[in-house]
Structure formats: C-alpha cells, structure tokens
Amino acid sequence: MNVLVIVDGGLVETLQASPLVRSLATGLEAARVTVACAPVAAPIAAQMPGVVEALGLEALAPDGVNPGSLLRGWLALRRRRFHAAAVCAIGGAAPTLAFFTGIPRRAGVASGVATLMLTDHVDREGTENRAALWLRLGAALGVPAASTRAEYDPGHGARIAAEQRMLASGFEDGRLMIAVAPGNGFADAVPLVASRSLAWEPERYAHLCNELTRRHGAGVVVLGTADDRLYVDAMLMDVESDTLDLAGEVTSLPEVAAVLERCDLLVCGDSPLLHLAAAVGTPSVGLFGPTSGTVRAPYGPEHRVVQAVDGGAPSLRQIRVDDVLAGIEAAAL
Image 1 (tube, rainbow, N blue to C red):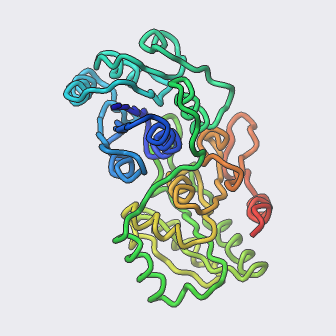
Image 2 (cartoon, rainbow, N blue to C red; image 1 turned 90 degrees about the vertical axis):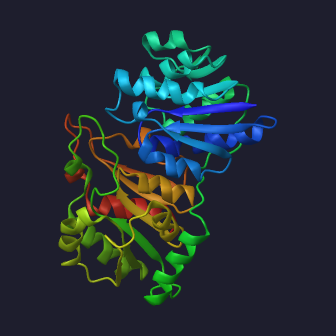
C-alpha cells in the first residue's frame, strides 16, 4: 500500500509528522510511505524510519504557494500512485495537491472550504500540539499510534564525526552536558514573526550556563550557524562554564542531530533543533515568546515549554533565567 504524508510548513512541522510516519509504516500491511514536504525539510524526511522517498515541493514551503509551484507539485505527485494520503496541513495547498492528484482516500484537518477536498477529516482541538494532531490523521485512516516520539536517524557518518569532535576536545568526561543555541540560524521562517524575536538575550543564556555549572557541574555545548556569531560571542563574553563552541563549525543537520544525541539536554528558542533533539532521544526545554509552545514544541512529557506570558505581545524578554532553571530542574537533571 502506497501512502503519502504531505506536510505544509517547514522543518518543525515535518519533524512533528515523524510519529505519524512511523505509525503508518508499522500499522499498514506492506506500507510504503512517501513524505512530500518543503524542500528544506526533504533531506531530514528521507532519514525518518519508514520513509521510502522524500519529495521536496516548493508549494509546501512557507510563502511558497503560487500557481506555478502548485502545478509543479501536482506533476511530481501524479507520476506516482498512492492509495491514501495523510494531509498534515491547516491551509489549502496540501489538500489541493492531494485532491487533484486523484488519491482515493485523503485524511486531513478540517479547515474551511479545503475540507471539501478530504474524504476523512479531524477537527482541531484548541491549541493542540501538531504532532498529536497529525497522529489523529492516522486514526482517521484506521491506524493506531505506534509511537508518540519523533524519530530521525543522523546516520553512521554523522555520528562518527560528532564523536570525533567531542572526544578530541576532551569534553566528554562524564559530566552533565547541556546544549544551547542562542541564535536564530536554524529557525524556520515563521509568518508574521520577526526572526530576531525568536532569540533569547545572550546575557540570559550566559547567566543560565553559569548557574547550570554552579548547581550541577554542567558543561555547555554551543550550537549555531555562522549567522549566529554575534549572539554566540555576546553570550560567551559572560560565560564562566566550560564550553565547547561548535557554532558555525557543525551546521549540517545530521551532524547537529548526532551532537545532540550525545548531550543530556537542549535549551533553545522555537527551532527545529528542539525536534531534532527529541527525535534522537534528548530532552529539551523550549523558550517560546511570540509563537505557541503548546502547538510547536516537541510532543511528550520529557520536553518542557517555558512560554512568555501572553500580554497581547508576548516576548522572550518576559522569560526569566529562574523560569528556565525551574523547567530544567523539573526535568530531573
């Protein structure tokens, strides 16, 4: 049985579809699962357990919908034969593609007129986590949830590279290792939200790192892209903890995931890194201001959300270091 999982959004939404992918792959006899998603997320989707093919379609990227991209997406899908589709989307582009591709059974989220393009639908339940919402699409297709955890395999090469970096630095010596990503370099584009507002202040990250070292003897692994250098340097000026600065050095997502796999915890803002950590079994504490942690954070009790108080214009500046420390220590570190 050929099943299409079609995801509208970025890396976050695609990784949130991983539990659904695993459920479909294990719950349907002889299932072959294809994931169609934004081009940036296709390499990650290809490494999810149970995926036989990942298609990067421009029409599924944030702000990528136009008549040309929809036509190209339709042409890519119509060359393949699918028996059912799980449409992980709130908007209309993904249901439109599934409908005009001629897939006989299409389960998705009820959303205005786009609901008419679905054969089965589920209703959103308030500010439901997207991973939980996508899992309910599997139930609509008659497949129970096999796992609620995101899953991703960084690959042997990425694991070896991460091991060499961390062992060569002498950093892996049995201490607690906390990964932090103070910038925006890995973040998805979020409509109507300025990217700068998704980053916590570097001085607060520095204070957090120092407290984690003082209280728990933690070492700190710093992650980020070259674009995050200003954030990272500003943080490191005030950090007294032992640090391993990999920002700008480890930027391929498989190797970043392999580094996260060797850490005990990740702390960062609304970022795909939270979901990569979850997918390799590392707990996380996510800092959310203008976006909803309830909706966008990793799914499961081992992942904590620190959400800025909604005062009309929630900002990460409303989150105190003590709030984050409480979230970390509640995770039984």
